View 1 (cartoon, one colour):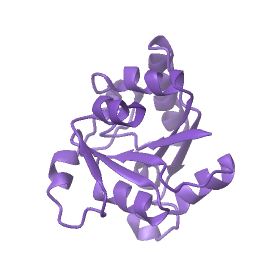
View 2: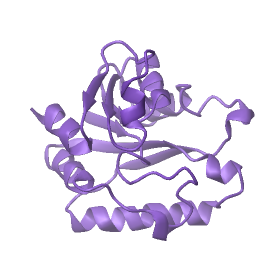
View 3: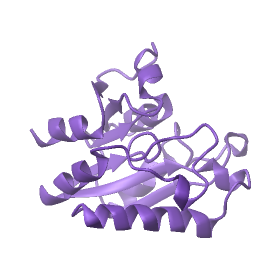
View 4: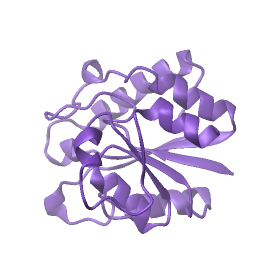
Length: 177
């Protein structure tokens, strides 16, 4: 099985320091939906792994998160793409859970659910925590310069072997090459 794991905010859609709290605030980064469709056409299972501490902070609820993802799925469908599964952590950093990236619990759950070894699986993120979670399970960290990625690219703590791309479309072109 070909599998790829994507962060959401800053990778697929524009991010906000105030969180994406409603479907109206969800706006795709140009080229990201077409990139996901290309992955689907190439036989990849596309999974989203996203920290959503806005739930734990009381900024939005599960119905709103589902509505945001529904908008995303509809937009993706129009581009000929799909997401095979969403995994999210609703906790804040203070909760000290095992699923919030940079911890690897969410990725371990993906591995269990898909009965997959994540060694070398491309895992795309825009923040250091995305890349650290990928490295912790032996996945291939791919950094995009969208979202927080430009700042993250300068971080001296990038996991060894992290590959850096302009955006999701460029990362996908590399994965499919």
